[in-house]
Each structure stands twice: as C-alpha cells, then as structure tokens.
Length: 339
Image (cartoon, rainbow, N blue to C red; front, side, top):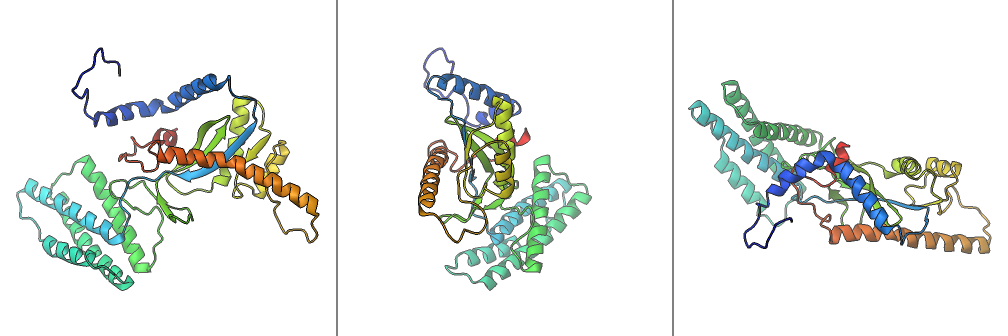
C-alpha cells in the first residue's frame, strides 16, 4: 500500500474506497487499455498466433432484495413519511395525518401470512398505492408552502413518483409489464433481465457482452437494459480488425449469434462459424458428412466452453456473482457505460 512500516491501525475508512472509485471512474477506459496491453506483453511469450474469438453474454447480478410490488410501495411510503415529518418541522406546522401506524399494521399482517393468493396481493398493492398517493400529495403541498428537500431527497422523491406511476399503471391495466420498471428504490437504474435459465429465470443487474482473445477477456458492451447480444457480433469483429489489422479466422458463439446477417457478414470476410445450418434440414443426409459435422460442432462447443468457465470464475471467485456497490458511479463497468 506504500506505507513505510507495518501498523495495526486501519490506514483509512472502508468508505473512502467509494471516493477513490469515483475519482478513477473518468479515466477507467485508459486504465483498462494500459492493463490490457501490459497483460498481453506478459503473456506474449506463451501465446501463439491464435486468430480465434469466443463471444458470449452474461448478467452480473446486483445485491438487491427480490422486488415485490407491495414491498416497494411500502418502502416508498415509509420514505415519504420521513419527508413529510421533516418538511412539517421546517415550516413549524402540524404534521399531516398519514395513518402510518395503521399502514404498518396492515403491511405486517399481510407479510406474516404463509400463503397469499393473487387477489390478496392485488388488494395489498391497492392499499399501498392509496397510502403513497396521499403522502405524495402531502409532500407536494408542504413544498409549495416553502419546505425544502436536499438534492438526494429530491432524487429519491422523483424515483418514488415514477414508481407510483408504474405501479398504478400496472394495477389499473392488470399487467406486470411496464417500460423501465423500477425494482429497487436505492438503485433505480437496475432492470429485470429475463435469462431463461433453469436456476433463475430473471436476474437483476447489468448485462455484459464479452469476448476472449488469446486468453484475455474483453468487455464489449455493458447495459442495464436487456439487449440482443447478436447485434454486437459485427462490432466485435470490426473492433478486432481495428486492433490487429486483420480479421479473425474463426469465431466461436452459441446459436443466438448465428443468424443470417451475422453468417453473411462472417462469410464476406472469410471468418468461419461452426454450427448447424439455418433453415429446413435436408431430407437425405450423408452419414459420413453428418458424423464429420457433428464432430466439428462438438469440438467447437467444447472450445467455446472456455468463456463459460471464465464467467463462472469471475462470479464465484472475483466477486461479480453479487455486486455490492450501491451508487451508479461506483458500480463495476460504470465507466464502460459512460465511455
């Protein structure tokens, strides 16, 4: 750490790391380039001239509580009650009646039920929407009378207002789908991303599109909103060409990347993509050709598993299996998002 001698005392507060990450964030792309070049120089002796790219995407989960509509609204209600109390004290006026004790009893009684039907969930959402609607009106009235909120409180108020509008829209239209759905008041930029995995169908966190080139992982794209990773296929190849001056000989991907546009683009530049052909299967298949194709596809899938093993390593050993940073500026990959 640069200290001249060993000491028992903690050199700085753990929260100071947040300040350092915020200062480093603007120059993070340059640091990534420097570290990547250094790693390539160190590995230059052991690397061969392998012109193969492995491409895949994954989600980096963020440490948030599993979102339930009624729990989000209850959290918004308690936050608004604190705003109302603070604004009333600023104006030296009586605190408006918010029925917070009654609202708390209703919420606790509901959450203690071991089994809750869909109708009970909907009724609880309706009750919480009514409490939040009243509290938002009180906050608006107290602010019109001269009450002041800090910038942080105003940002939280805007998030709660958006949450209320989304939940009210879903309740009125009897749906669970809304654009830019908020799943966490503390991290409103986090979005639910459908993955279709057997273990967890929906994950909450940024989705990354990554490649492996000569054993080095490169982050191609990071986004909190869901995206189709096959649209980045051509950009990955062009970035490789810009970096090395030539196109790769082979690219290993899953079937999602192998659409007609990407296959045509790869064929145009002499890049080989191993996988089953698109379209209807032929009626008569030569057994020898089929066995050769199956062997090639099996070998390519085994080699593609390298990126899956890398994802497993960085999630289980490097802390990206559950990101605990809270603010958008200190989240991993945020500098990539800004760049």
